[in-house]
Image 1 (tube, rainbow, N blue to C red):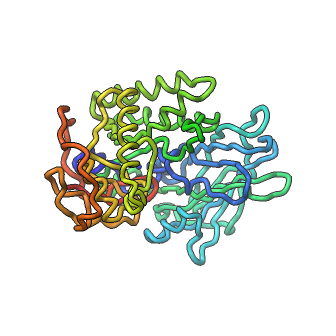
Image 2: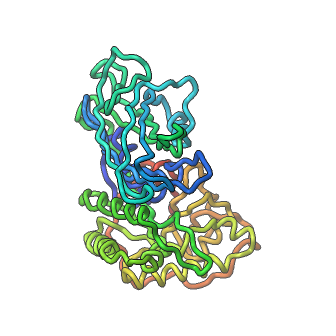
Image 3: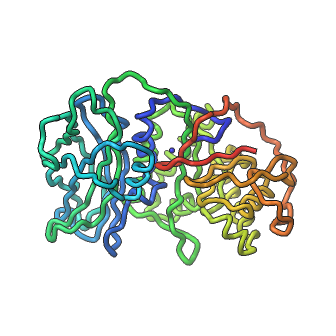
Length: 412
């Protein structure tokens, strides 16, 4: 979770970074809720402790929503050997086990929080973590994970597979992969300058009438996410709120007034101190490159205009409009379409190469474009602003993050 270069920075230990990303990623990371069957069950990570020092405790919370009673479900956790490189990390994010890997240890069956009717709520766990160099591979203990190493040599990032299982059939309903960050000591190692970006409301679906109502589980996840942000008052964060989320909150019955107030209060108070920077967004996430390739540039303009109207109506004129969070990789045509809307900084998803720089019609270097005149849309407006930008800190020399993958950043 990151900031674009020139925005607020945060120093953090290298091994701590991975886990903190998952704390804030629950609403923005579809891969955390891998699908293994055709039903409508959802199983997502809501929060997780940053790291474990030596023999300590790993805390995490999961959201469970399924069409069966919670008494018929159980959760099991499997720990795998620590990762050796970025490629192995990427594989585990996609729920692909590294070649030759075998589980180190696992927990016994753990119950899901009970509620009336079908399962719909958040369950919290606290697991013991031990070195345990003398152990049986894939051994199970009630609530203990064994790393299989000598104390003092265990530091690293360990994949953890969390599975939701139907007690009646022993079938896996859903599973996801997160990571245990094990530290041999509490001393800060390899400090990094990083920024954090969190998007909210990117996974909602619009109904045919243009509205969407939040489920009880989605409200719980959003509530937990806001609580997590509030628990890190010193963390500088860039937040992208897709206005479709604001519309969904108002359309939900009964209206979650306390949650809406908490969201508004968090943005207003943290924006005033510049510890949160709210970035403007189109009403709903769109593949900008696909719109440009299909000649539907006006749709992007309309979504940006609607998004700006809804955001300013909710939070006032606090959102910056010169930065764009691209939900999909940008082609040259897609970058051109962004450029003509006077966007000067891009946050790109993992695997994106910065498009070649071109001259922007806004008088600055484009975030990225091809030198193809026919792919350019008409300039919709002059690139000017009467608002003073917030104070900015020194640019980061490291890669910022969109949880849980690394992202590529381009600045005009």
